[in-house]
Every structure is written in structure tokens, then in C-alpha cells.
Image 1 (spheres, rainbow, N blue to C red):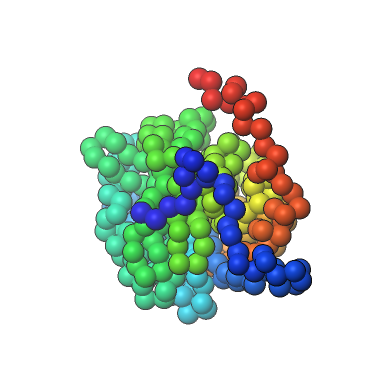
Image 2: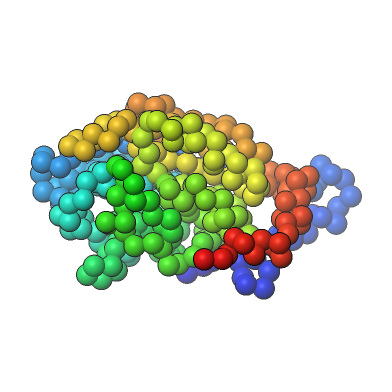
Length: 316
């Protein structure tokens, strides 16, 4: 697994040979990224087929958009949380344990072929089975040559009305890895994680340039937070974020409306591309990673942090 960051100095800035040049205009050579987010509604749900059939229907619905992304030159593509199943956590039906799979495994290997075909990094959120009874909410990261780089396991697991996730997932145990892909240093934060700024900061200290947050969130209080928290993380840590939500209503749970609205936000906390609330959609945006250095040269949040005063944060 290729990761960035170390215990010694996780936030050491990148060194550019151009820094020796006096003219400001020559300090930054553009590092343009074309990234895509896929938000989709369910084609088939509980009661409309076996779990295997439901999973396959969702994969088949993704494939045309994966192909479209590849043909349009997308370099980094991310799917929604547990992309190939319904969001089954409003219930507590152990039958859905059957939908978990090894990572890497069949679905990961399938996406590796698309990554290699289109020279495209793909982030694949999957229900992971490590062994019998040990299940995680996971995202696999595949590099542009089809290489499996590693995975992130969701660290913060909610357990409240409509979101009974502790019934299905163990808390993650892999920390906050950052993956050196062909195009950028990529981190992942999954859905409920976004309510916790601590992990978002760890991703920044570990060198993330883009953090992807695949989610499954419904209308209500969280819809306001959807446009608040992630821009705050992006601004506080000086990186880009790609935030993905699913679309529509999911029977038989009827938790509420998954309101889409997937978006990209820049290191200044400004949303610069956003999908619709209701439609299946591939959102594509272009952005310059050198904006990170430009912003951090003004807002020196990593320089001015005071970790020696934060002891309370790590008390149990």
C-alpha cells in the first residue's frame, strides 16, 4: 500500500524546485485534476430479488457511468457509500450480512479492470467481510493502472434511529491512511465520519490533497450540515473534497429522501460543482491541486496548531 505521512513529520510540506525562482508567477505549475462522483438511486431493492441479484443490478447501473467517466478523461472517480447495495441500516436484518465480501475481492477485482482500461483511479465503497462476524464499512482505493492500493474502514459508526450501523459494522481499525495514486494523494472519510473534525485533520496531516466522502444521508437536519461540515473541513485543512450522496427513496425502509447534491469543494471552503437533488448523475469537475499550496501559504493552520494543548481530545 502506498501511503503518505509518517509518525515523525506527517505534515511536512511538498518541496518544489520552482521555489527558488523569484517571480511569483512561476512558483506554481498547474496540476490539473479531472475528477468524477457518481450518485445513483436503486434499480432493485429488498423483496425484488436475491441479495446477489440486487448487488449485480446496482453494479450494472454504475457501469455506463463508469464508462462515461473514462471516456471523458476522468482521472479519479468515487462511488457512494456501500455502492452496490441499498442502505439497509434503518433495519436490523442479519440477512444483509450476506452482502459483505472480502476486500480485495470479486467487486474490487472487477473495478480494477475498469481502472486499468481507462487509466483512472477508482474509490470503491464496499461492505467488507474480514472473517465470519467481522464486518466493516470500507472503501477500496484502486490506482490508475489497476493496482489495489489499500482500503479505509469507516471509523465513526452511528447507532441511532434509522442508522443502526453498529448492528452491521465494526469501527475501523486502519487509522486515516492517505494513498499516493498516479494523480494525487487521496484520503477517504465515510458518511458519519464527516461529523468529526479530528479525523479530517489527521487526513490533512498525513498529506491528503483530495478527501472523498461517500455517504448515504437523508433530508432533515443533515441536509443543512451537508453543505456546512465538509466545506469547513476543506478550509480548515487546506485540501479539496469530493462529497457523494445517493438519490431517491429506498423501500421497504422508507427512511426518507436521499437528496443527492453531491459536490466538490476547494481549499477555501467554496463549493464549485454540484449535482442535482433528484437525478442519477455523474458529476465531473476540473481543479488545480496547486491551489492547496497557494491557500496554505496564506492560512497557516498547520503551522499555528497547538497539539500540546489538545490533550483533552485523546482522553477516553
